[in-house]
Length: 208
Image (cartoon, rainbow, N blue to C red):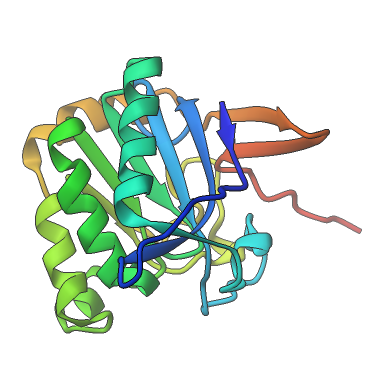
Protein backbone atom coordinates (compact mmCIF):
# COMPACT_ATOMS: atom_id res chain seq x y z
CA UNK A 1 0.00 0.00 0.00
CA UNK A 2 1.22 3.50 -0.87
CA UNK A 3 0.15 6.70 0.84
CA UNK A 4 1.88 9.31 -1.29
CA UNK A 5 -0.31 12.39 -1.14
CA UNK A 6 -1.99 13.09 2.16
CA UNK A 7 -4.87 15.48 2.57
CA UNK A 8 -5.74 16.18 6.20
CA UNK A 9 -7.46 18.75 8.33
CA UNK A 10 -5.14 20.43 10.78
CA UNK A 11 -5.85 21.90 14.16
CA UNK A 12 -4.42 25.32 14.84
CA UNK A 13 -1.12 25.06 16.69
CA UNK A 14 -0.71 21.34 16.08
CA UNK A 15 2.78 19.96 15.50
CA UNK A 16 3.15 18.78 11.92
CA UNK A 17 5.63 16.89 9.80
CA UNK A 18 6.47 17.29 6.13
CA UNK A 19 5.81 13.86 4.63
CA UNK A 20 6.94 12.53 1.26
CA UNK A 21 5.35 9.08 1.24
CA UNK A 22 4.40 6.04 3.28
CA UNK A 23 4.74 2.43 2.10
CA UNK A 24 3.59 -0.79 3.72
CA UNK A 25 4.47 -3.62 4.00
CA UNK A 26 8.16 -3.17 3.14
CA UNK A 27 10.88 -5.84 3.53
CA UNK A 28 13.90 -4.08 1.99
CA UNK A 29 14.59 -1.59 4.80
CA UNK A 30 14.95 -3.73 7.87
CA UNK A 31 13.90 -7.09 9.31
CA UNK A 32 10.32 -8.36 9.04
CA UNK A 33 7.20 -6.62 7.83
CA UNK A 34 7.64 -2.88 8.15
CA UNK A 35 5.79 0.37 7.72
CA UNK A 36 8.13 2.89 6.07
CA UNK A 37 7.80 6.65 6.31
CA UNK A 38 9.80 9.05 4.16
CA UNK A 39 9.96 12.60 5.47
CA UNK A 40 10.16 15.50 3.03
CA UNK A 41 13.16 17.82 3.08
CA UNK A 42 16.94 17.51 3.21
CA UNK A 43 19.61 20.20 2.91
CA UNK A 44 22.55 17.84 2.37
CA UNK A 45 22.00 17.31 -1.37
CA UNK A 46 24.24 14.22 -1.54
CA UNK A 47 25.53 13.55 -5.05
CA UNK A 48 23.67 10.56 -6.51
CA UNK A 49 20.91 10.68 -3.88
CA UNK A 50 18.37 7.90 -4.50
CA UNK A 51 15.45 10.22 -3.64
CA UNK A 52 16.16 13.72 -4.97
CA UNK A 53 12.42 14.38 -5.11
CA UNK A 54 12.43 14.34 -1.29
CA UNK A 55 15.06 17.08 -0.88
CA UNK A 56 12.67 20.01 -1.20
CA UNK A 57 10.96 21.30 1.93
CA UNK A 58 7.68 21.63 0.10
CA UNK A 59 5.04 18.97 0.49
CA UNK A 60 2.33 17.51 2.66
CA UNK A 61 2.32 19.05 6.11
CA UNK A 62 0.64 16.44 8.29
CA UNK A 63 -0.57 16.69 11.87
CA UNK A 64 1.55 14.41 14.10
CA UNK A 65 -1.40 12.63 15.67
CA UNK A 66 -3.03 11.99 12.30
CA UNK A 67 0.27 10.71 10.93
CA UNK A 68 0.81 8.45 13.94
CA UNK A 69 -2.70 7.03 13.56
CA UNK A 70 -1.97 6.25 9.88
CA UNK A 71 1.25 4.42 10.73
CA UNK A 72 -0.33 2.37 13.51
CA UNK A 73 -3.35 1.51 11.37
CA UNK A 74 -1.12 0.31 8.53
CA UNK A 75 0.93 -1.74 10.98
CA UNK A 76 -2.21 -3.53 12.15
CA UNK A 77 -3.49 -4.13 8.61
CA UNK A 78 -0.19 -5.61 7.39
CA UNK A 79 0.97 -7.14 10.68
CA UNK A 80 4.07 -4.95 10.78
CA UNK A 81 6.14 -4.88 13.94
CA UNK A 82 8.85 -2.63 12.51
CA UNK A 83 8.88 1.04 11.53
CA UNK A 84 11.53 2.60 9.28
CA UNK A 85 11.81 6.39 9.01
CA UNK A 86 13.90 7.77 6.16
CA UNK A 87 13.74 10.78 3.90
CA UNK A 88 14.71 13.41 3.12
CA UNK A 89 16.32 13.58 6.54
CA UNK A 90 14.02 13.02 9.53
CA UNK A 91 16.43 14.84 11.86
CA UNK A 92 15.93 18.06 9.91
CA UNK A 93 12.46 17.97 11.45
CA UNK A 94 13.65 16.86 14.87
CA UNK A 95 10.82 18.51 16.85
CA UNK A 96 8.23 16.72 14.74
CA UNK A 97 10.21 13.47 14.74
CA UNK A 98 10.41 13.52 18.53
CA UNK A 99 6.67 13.99 18.93
CA UNK A 100 5.90 11.29 16.36
CA UNK A 101 8.23 8.72 17.92
CA UNK A 102 6.78 9.35 21.37
CA UNK A 103 3.29 8.59 20.08
CA UNK A 104 4.07 5.45 18.05
CA UNK A 105 6.81 3.90 20.23
CA UNK A 106 4.49 1.52 22.04
CA UNK A 107 3.01 0.25 18.75
CA UNK A 108 6.30 -0.99 17.21
CA UNK A 109 8.87 -3.51 18.48
CA UNK A 110 11.61 -2.08 16.27
CA UNK A 111 12.15 1.48 15.07
CA UNK A 112 14.92 2.18 12.54
CA UNK A 113 15.76 5.75 11.53
CA UNK A 114 18.09 6.99 8.77
CA UNK A 115 19.87 10.34 8.90
CA UNK A 116 22.57 12.12 6.93
CA UNK A 117 23.91 13.54 10.19
CA UNK A 118 26.43 11.55 12.20
CA UNK A 119 25.49 10.32 15.67
CA UNK A 120 28.18 12.47 17.30
CA UNK A 121 26.74 15.54 15.59
CA UNK A 122 23.28 14.73 16.92
CA UNK A 123 24.67 14.27 20.44
CA UNK A 124 26.33 17.68 20.03
CA UNK A 125 22.92 19.27 19.33
CA UNK A 126 23.22 19.75 15.55
CA UNK A 127 19.47 19.19 15.41
CA UNK A 128 18.71 20.66 18.81
CA UNK A 129 17.71 19.12 22.12
CA UNK A 130 14.79 17.41 20.42
CA UNK A 131 17.23 15.55 18.18
CA UNK A 132 18.98 14.13 21.24
CA UNK A 133 15.62 13.26 22.79
CA UNK A 134 14.65 11.28 19.69
CA UNK A 135 17.42 8.78 20.34
CA UNK A 136 15.73 7.19 23.35
CA UNK A 137 12.82 6.14 21.13
CA UNK A 138 15.01 4.67 18.34
CA UNK A 139 16.28 1.08 18.33
CA UNK A 140 18.64 1.34 15.36
CA UNK A 141 20.12 4.47 13.79
CA UNK A 142 21.92 4.47 10.44
CA UNK A 143 23.90 7.68 10.13
CA UNK A 144 26.11 9.63 7.75
CA UNK A 145 25.79 11.23 4.32
CA UNK A 146 25.55 9.16 1.16
CA UNK A 147 28.87 9.08 -0.72
CA UNK A 148 28.40 7.69 -4.20
CA UNK A 149 32.01 6.52 -4.60
CA UNK A 150 31.60 4.42 -1.44
CA UNK A 151 28.47 2.59 -2.61
CA UNK A 152 29.44 -1.10 -2.55
CA UNK A 153 27.15 -4.17 -2.62
CA UNK A 154 28.38 -5.32 0.79
CA UNK A 155 26.67 -2.32 2.43
CA UNK A 156 23.37 -3.97 3.26
CA UNK A 157 20.86 -1.42 4.61
CA UNK A 158 23.43 1.33 3.92
CA UNK A 159 23.86 3.42 0.80
CA UNK A 160 27.64 3.75 1.24
CA UNK A 161 30.28 2.22 3.49
CA UNK A 162 30.93 5.40 5.47
CA UNK A 163 27.49 5.05 7.03
CA UNK A 164 27.30 3.23 10.38
CA UNK A 165 24.61 1.03 11.89
CA UNK A 166 24.23 2.03 15.55
CA UNK A 167 22.37 -0.43 17.79
CA UNK A 168 20.90 1.94 20.34
CA UNK A 169 18.92 -1.05 21.60
CA UNK A 170 21.32 -4.01 21.79
CA UNK A 171 18.39 -6.44 21.82
CA UNK A 172 17.90 -5.69 18.11
CA UNK A 173 21.44 -6.62 17.07
CA UNK A 174 20.83 -10.34 16.43
CA UNK A 175 17.75 -9.71 14.25
CA UNK A 176 19.62 -7.15 12.17
CA UNK A 177 22.77 -9.22 11.83
CA UNK A 178 20.67 -12.13 10.53
CA UNK A 179 18.94 -9.77 8.11
CA UNK A 180 22.26 -8.40 6.85
CA UNK A 181 23.32 -11.89 5.79
CA UNK A 182 20.67 -11.82 3.03
CA UNK A 183 22.42 -9.08 1.07
CA UNK A 184 20.78 -6.06 -0.47
CA UNK A 185 17.07 -6.33 -1.25
CA UNK A 186 15.06 -4.21 -3.68
CA UNK A 187 11.28 -3.88 -3.93
CA UNK A 188 9.07 -2.02 -6.37
CA UNK A 189 5.70 -0.40 -5.69
CA UNK A 190 3.36 0.97 -8.34
CA UNK A 191 1.00 3.89 -7.78
CA UNK A 192 -0.73 6.15 -10.32
CA UNK A 193 1.46 4.77 -13.13
CA UNK A 194 4.58 5.60 -11.12
CA UNK A 195 7.10 3.00 -9.89
CA UNK A 196 8.83 3.53 -6.55
CA UNK A 197 11.93 1.46 -5.73
CA UNK A 198 12.88 0.81 -2.11
CA UNK A 199 16.15 -0.59 -0.80
CA UNK A 200 19.79 0.12 -1.60
CA UNK A 201 20.69 0.25 -5.28
CA UNK A 202 24.17 -0.80 -6.41
CA UNK A 203 26.20 1.90 -8.11
CA UNK A 204 26.85 1.01 -11.75
CA UNK A 205 30.45 1.72 -12.68
CA UNK A 206 31.08 3.28 -16.06
CA UNK A 207 34.02 1.88 -18.01
CA UNK A 208 35.51 3.26 -21.18
